[in-house]
Length: 273
Image (cartoon, rainbow, N blue to C red):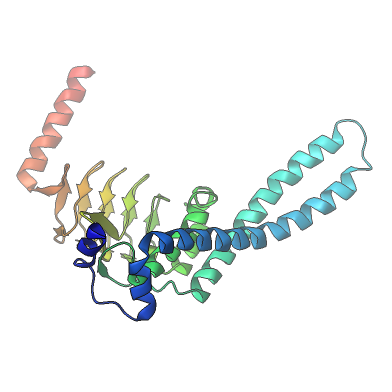
């Protein structure tokens, strides 16, 4: 019981009797939460599969009367259509679940096994159903933007989001004309030392996040700022308006230093050429 007691010092006071019970039997509660998530995921996937299966049955009823290779061609075509019907249906089902269930994520710092963390767990569990199945197929389409907004992500007009590596969309704000490059990782939480910290992320208007950079929880990026590719913004980073940051961990790069880097890059390119 000593590790458990130590963990409780990092938690806010219990919300109610249920929260006290969850903390008292944390491992059992975690196992039950996982089983609950699997059950919810199964029902969500089942609902999304229903229209695809209906279309599949109609294609099969028609294909059975065909001859030669046509039944196989029709079946392959039908499977492809059903996949996209399933995916588009999932884009609707998951936000509905997110709306109905207790998934209102709030900033939090404390232990993982607590009632405070349950909305975060459910919210991301639902979101990942789409992120790891169909989101890559709609990332650069209006369907992708609509889904992110439906999950609670605040996205300004003409924002360009070329990544599906997102967590905690409910706590992420993207400004107008902002650009998130390919494979950018952005999430509104971090953890360590027994703590789970859930904190919002804000990306300003016209800000640019370069290829594969990483933005962690509790980060604010100002208007017109630039984050260089592959950089890592650690929790607590505050990028001022118009600033350029880069590196691991990312730091502010002054204009003069950035000009020197550009000159060096051009020099290497000319040498190679």
